[in-house]
Length: 616
Image 1 (cartoon, rainbow, N blue to C red):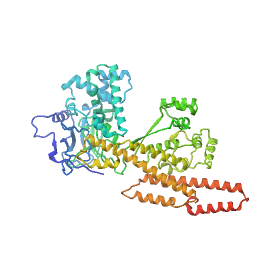
Image 2: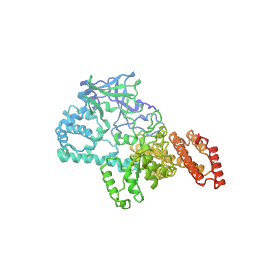
Image 3: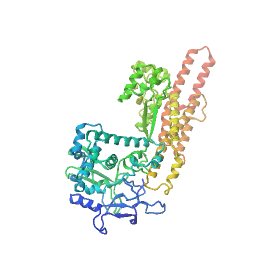
């Protein structure tokens, strides 16, 4: 895991120093905290100059640390550093309750009471009440506010937040689903503003829509979820919100009831002069960028896991002859009102009239390079899209054991469906072909069959190809661009946008590689079933294993495990199905054709020779 270097002394300033003439806003802020019982003597605030773009200049500040603010005109890049060596398990900061702004304080304002009584359906209620207090207190009490020293040091602008980006800066996200999220965030904030104005017109006297947005993003990027007096709340915690993000976490924070204070405790020793970090959690870069205004260059955990995600949209083709049946199964067991209404309508009409529904039902799945619940859901949905009529009838059977037996019989399988727990954890699939019962499309956790799995992978590759084509640059171009610190300066919006789209493409390329590898293996399985054993399944898997250790062409272990275990299980089922079919043919012909009996036996012997593990 990377470790940041502290900026050199020429590029940062100790805010609370004896060299300052008079008291600046930071000194006033720290004095206000101390006068009210706060403790942070082991720490100091530092303000950083705008970072240079010279690669050879070691004064570039904090290469891997991420900032909440990055104003370039008046520097608002700040951090908290240790004044001396701080041992582990040391309380390095304590902010008394009286210095916290809580949700309950916002609810107690005249505006807050009006909003509370109106029972509005707001996008982020806890955030709203924190915003209300800050906006109301700043306007009503002004410099006489108890929290005035805190308000003074809040960033005056938040130009690093994507909702405030220019059109040129947003163009750096072309092709990214984050653009939609930014638009949704802007719309949600505006909806909240006008909804509150309808029940409390005086909000317009307190702030404009732009000021309301500023307050929303200040709160979004700075609030802490705490338990105070036995119930969950959110709070603005002055000074604690200055800590920048770093993983793995080096500190922990909580509200201590016995102290009636918010505390930060070190989890490890922190040397003198080093930056003291908070962890904002394990998050995808789109969440970091949307909510905090930065993207992490190397967003990986210690174990190598990268939480970066990309959104994949799936929908049933309205021209699919099975459109009605597939949509009904897609929306089964869901609570969404629109989906339930549409499902009822599709049941009322037959499938041939389903094209009256002009807007397809889209299921959005956010996936990362991992075998988690979302990746399993992606495969489940793809298998339904890939179903032909026989397969769909089989997987949607809900009548009981008899229907399940019929469904399995359609594929020439036995009526028992053994479940392999190990396989069920690989790529969202398991060892059997059909389960005992599918309640919804989420339950399709293992291959339906060789044909279906192939079509599902073809669909996946098609979707990935379209997604990659929507970006104006390739992954290779993004990597090259990020190596150019002059064109893409550190901490700039331009660079953060590039980091975001690069991360999305890395996930898309992972699933494209998965689809291609799966189809290659299924090609081998089909050739084996047709009597061609070169290259063998085992040799193909061995070649993938070589790729997984090749630094220039890495195959993720998740893909390798899927190909070896899941497709290996599917291969065994297909061989069993083929063997049963051959046995039925032999039984039907009886002794009438000795040559056929001999050929069948010989074929079985050949299969046993080339695939001894299948029949063990």
